[in-house]
Image 1: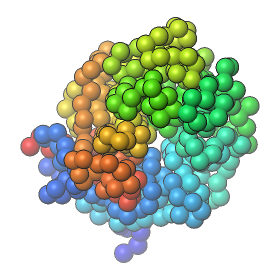
Image 2: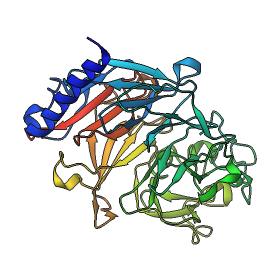
Image 3: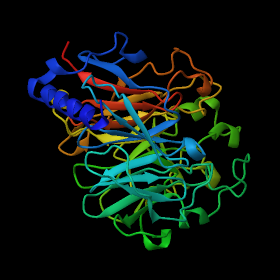
Length: 424
């Protein structure tokens, strides 16, 4: 059977599922593919062993594109298609090369975000894999091994937004060196530690051609455009409070204090305080970083910075975020945010934490503080994880399917789950 005929059968099956409701949804795996979900939800593994899977893009016809953060020919994007309507992906096509973390579909183009570039491929209607060569949209972006991961999003009005992480923990004179003071002002912020906005349709742009949309950010591949016409970011906060400042901070404080904040940017010019301040999860306020004279209590350098809209526990390591717009899930999920927490190494010597997908509810356009819930868990395969590399899976991408179900990608083995609400 030709690919075109298989695609037609899959399209008809998908349409039948849409018309008949949940009864036609694909069957879930008995064990939900190894993860635990709230009552009424189940999951099936729709693809596996893809590589270091990161962000996800879903086309209107149901095709799925998974960014792969691998070097050379193993990077790029894996394109997936369901040809028989069973909800799983039988067809796989590899697109592009090089480490890729961000991926998006906009106006018939597939956009890929690499550490130093953003490129796009023209999608042909009905075809899974683009036929032509890539076009370079942005080149020359800063991106090194430390915090070089890129995410991307669109505002729907012609602008492309890209995160540029800071290649530093706290902008010290000697990075990650005990009691080395912070540079003031921090020179890194000129080209790093912020969001840049570009024309999504202009080719060959460089960083200086973009708009410096927000600053004071450390590392934040979790970036998306919200339903309230604003940019949302969930940031990885600073590491090693106790190691860098022994005698001032303990290992316990390092494990719980530097929250992972969610920020909202409605207009250009926001400043979120890195490296001068961090948002304290317990105190619910910015405190001055020790590199800039802070003792964990004072906030003398923090009054001028924009506040987060909510925050999450320390070292959960957010790597993707999306707003749910579907109708398959119960009404409380509408316009709320799903966040993929990859988990960090930085809670040591305590057990690691995070490694989940969390749901953050919104009401009247505002996050409901303190009401976030862990939506998917069980990725690590153990109740007490000490080494991140020992995790069985690590959530790294979230995206919505056309029918309102939810895709989750894993970066350890390249597994992809589809989460369905069946009300049971």
